[in-house]
Length: 138
Length: 138
Image 1 (tube, one colour):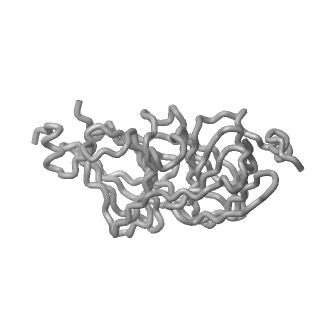
Image 2 (cartoon, rainbow over the protein chains, first blue to last red):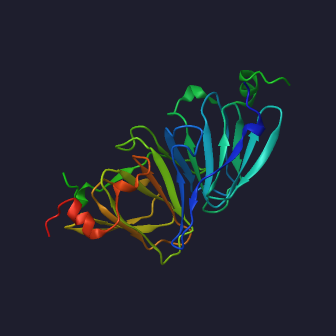
Image 3 (spheres, rainbow over the protein chains, first blue to last red):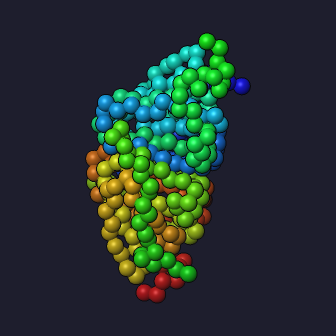
């Protein structure tokens, strides 16, 4: 079944608040998938834009562990822009959602936790291919 | 066998350099263990100190994904202070090493990837207990 932008959800990352700093912990049941790969984006120029792809199967969460950025999500029918700026708020993006990331604040860091090892065939990097693959009716 | 501070190693996180920002990727074979839990420390006051514990079995890497901090490692015989300030340099800390984290820069974020789910019995939170558990000869 094709994902819709309403399937993109916030996940609260449990946070241990402490005068010595806050600790956000992603454990077994925090995410709807087991973490197979971790990556993070840093030293991003404020005018840069990233993303512009969808995944056939991969599930992902994004977290602004430092600073802020905006995530554009698109299911082929609807498009929405979401501001990420809290280290304990993760954005869950299921497969079948086109996404772009932009408007990075200075010093921002985007942490990404995903459900699979890297596989180029899982990527759809062209928007028209995305619409065709998921048979979105125009 | 008891770990020594020389068993604490740098791991280069593969980095994809791009004018739109740098992407550091932790995949299957990047670390000497599978990632079971991810946590990150943020909003740390610059005068705070964290850590002060060892693990019986857990393996861990620490990364300064933003800013910098110092990690003190101690095997009961030797003690060493290590500055972390590069998002693509992870510090691997095996089990049996006492560690403390201090001297956080403003806005720093400490990302931690570990080999197991949380287990309080794996923690040793008292330095003398640490020496006794690993039978360090004084």
